[in-house]
Length: 256
Image (tube, rainbow, N blue to C red; front, side, top):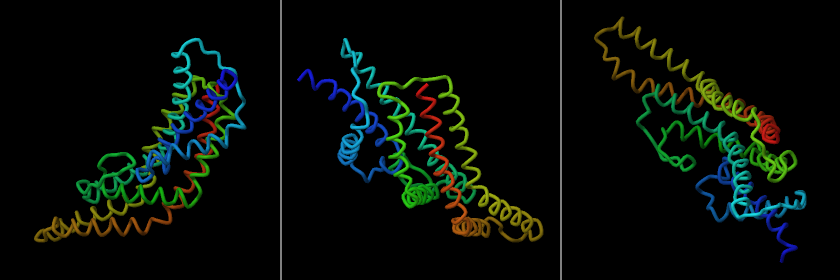
């Protein structure tokens, strides 16, 4: 039993990093996938990756020492998971901006991914993003990143270098930039609609612009959503392609 102890410890540490990512990264963390299925997938992936992970001798004097090593693997998974989730946060934020200008900010729906109420436009954008993510094999990109993480960051070898926090801050700031770029064309169309309504209100004072403007704004907003769908698809594809570079940069930063 003592001879098997190092292998068991390594297996569990690999499993901890993988299951943390499966709990946090998009698609795998969807509510439609039960936790038992995620654990089973993590176990299968761990078994397939364990031959590539070197069996290291972990010197542990106390249980607290082993818990500390587990914490390092959990933190590695959390950082990689949040870096991936930033793209989807930007998409949902863009939906929130569009909903506000369309007058749909009060029309909300429950999003099982973030486990909170969001606007219906954000929900539509989120579902579209997940569908596109699967179509362009983004989930395989995540599995590849998990596999590469053990090559770049050795087991229990995560080091919080000085570049990690500034890089995460820059990624979080990019959420606002990406959201504005996604919502930009629709914002312009809605802005022009409101400007036109303002001019109409000045030239035809007897017209009730509020009665005309509300359905017109909604109609223009939905038309803009459909009209800009190909552009959004191409832009989101580009974001997913840059995710490989983002995760690679973050992995090297975590490796110290």
